[in-house]
Length: 245
View (cartoon, helix red, strand yellow):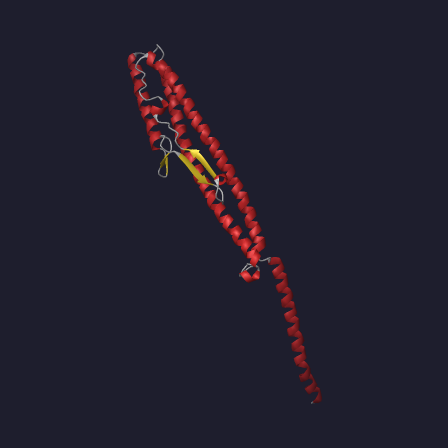
C-alpha cells in the first residue's frame, strides 16, 4: 500500500470502499467536465458582450453626430460629411452584429436561438443552464439602418432612434451579465464540490502515509532485532568450542 500510494489495490482489500471511491471518481470527472462547459458558456457571453460594447460605442458616436448635425451653426456641406461618417459607422455596427461568433454560432444577429449547457454531474433540468442567443443587434433590428444627417430635421429624428437603440443594447448587455454571474456562481460551486469530493475519495482509497510509515518502521525494528538475536545465538557455539579447545 505504501509503495502504490493506494490503500485499496483490489476489490478484496475493501469492496465497499472501492465502490464508494469509484462512484466519487465518476462524480468528480463529471463535475470537471461540467466546469469546462461553464467556462465555455462564459466565454461565449464575453464574446457577445465585447461585440455589444463596440456597437454601444458606435451608437454613442452616432448620437454625437446627430447633435452636431441638428445645429444651425454648420452648413449643408459640413452636414454631408457628418452624414457620410454616420452611414459608415452604421455599416460597421451591422458588420459587428453579423460577424460576432463563438465556434460556429452567431451571437448577435438573431439566429443563435436558445443554448443549453450541462453544468452539473447528473441528468435533469436542475443541472443545466439555458439562455437565449437570439439577441439581434443588427442595424435593422435596432432601427438605425437608413438614418441620415442630410438636414437638420433628419438629424433630430436620428437622436430619438439612437436613444431607443441604446436602450435595446443596454438590455441585451444586462441579460448577458446576469447569465454570466449565474454561470460563474455555478463554476465556483463546482470547484468547491470537486475539492470536497476529491478529499473524501483520498480518505477512502489512498494510503495513510504516516500510519503506514510507522508500521513499516516498527516492522523494520522488529526485523533488525530478530536478526541481531539470531546472530548472537550463532556466535554461542563458536565461543563454546573455543573455550573447550
